[in-house]
Image (cartoon, rainbow, N blue to C red; front, side, top):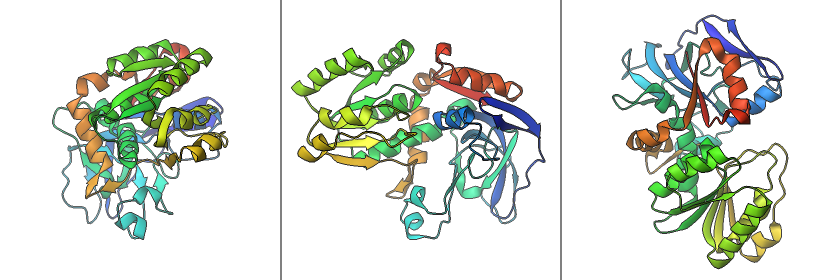
Length: 340
């Protein structure tokens, strides 16, 4: 079968590899859609960071074959894949915090992912997709689950005022999850196409992510401080310098973005206002319900809105062009999806 492979900085190509066979407890999935996310681009820019795994962890497809011992799935069933492989036995896993399992692997990083024609995964990673939900929207379940998890960790309540820093795909889905929790949402956006998307998502206001916008946002928050801030930018941004200054005393800040280097933090404001700072790593389960299941329901309920996030679609044969488009801000890409 064909699968994507990092060949060097900003070089990704297809290679022929053996089609995987599902082992005990595993399912073979025919990949129908796989999104390219910010962490994929980070590895792309760095030449893969030494990993030989097939990339891609935003995966939807259909069951192709069952490994020994698997029950409850039928070939042809449309599924989304929760791309965490965990031990399922430690105290963290058994209480639902399997995203913190010390033996966890993320598909596309420590184990082959979904930018291929087929992928073999543990059966416990599969979630059924609602009938009629297009596979590219099914692949959005993964980034949506990240957003749902962050909102759950912050315990966002109806009527609260929440700032989402960043209007990339994760930021926009975080706004959706935050609004679904009944909160009022304000966002920051670096590019005009992101600001336009944020407005489509029904946020209260969008501030430019530049020096002038930061001053306007500070004045806005001085009059009415936010209950919580969700940081989705990461990279080399100074967002954690500003975030603790924008929340009320006793407010909360959740870090979702992945920073390439240890970021600067406004520790004085954090301490002075007793700001609670929490990180959000992927997704887990609470009260017996997986964040991933909630995410699929959220995508299905707002399918027309979230479909607008998918700005570019490519076949697997054009994997190099897909990555180049996702990496090019001039393309105005929000979410690039590959459809093998």
